[in-house]
Image 1 (cartoon, rainbow, N blue to C red):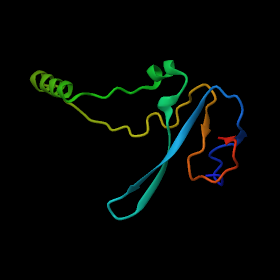
Image 2 (image 1 turned 120 degrees about the horizontal axis):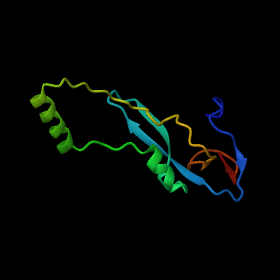
Image 3 (image 1 turned 90 degrees about the horizontal axis):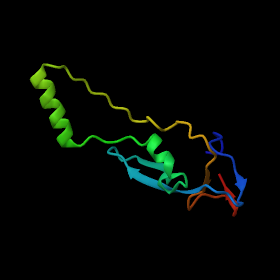
Length: 111
């Protein structure tokens, strides 16, 4: 991650918004292991921002109702899958991340 300039290291100070991160390890179907770094955004100190970036999920009952209305009215339906909608969206303020356990970095540094 350092070679790709994913983050900048700063000395730990009295920052308002520090979020921790953790590693998530999964094993793919073909036996390949995958590691992802997940930042725990739910611990953000700006709770009002959740309403601006939250993507509601459709419940099954509502989907069935929409399909039945479309069939009864003769509408055509299409489906789209957006996987990384908010992955690179700007948030408008600085967030400092505490490096996850197991990452080799000097003590007292943040990303």
